[in-house]
Length: 140
Image (cartoon, rainbow, N blue to C red):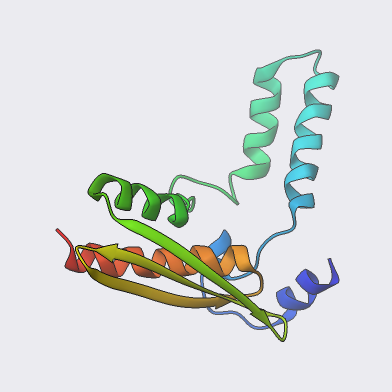
């Protein structure tokens, strides 16, 4: 947890939400939100409407249809599957920084993107997004 708090102290000019912010949020955050929803559900005598109203107020500033993005790894996988392209990921970790290279084979040509992040999950998502954007620009 200390790692995440240190990263939040650093100045940041990129997106402020989601994986694209470059800071992978700890799983414990999801567990806390799930626990809150469960507690509200029990306290409200199993009333889903009360849970929804309570959680909506909590989550609305964080997650809206405008701020929630689909997982770029899944989007790249779907893009490749529709066109019968193959993809592969190579991961490396050095000095506290993870690096991921994603490659896609398109009719004998290899396209790739390399990105870094605080962990391999964030780096993989950033690499997939980068390559997907590049492929969409050159592949019909």
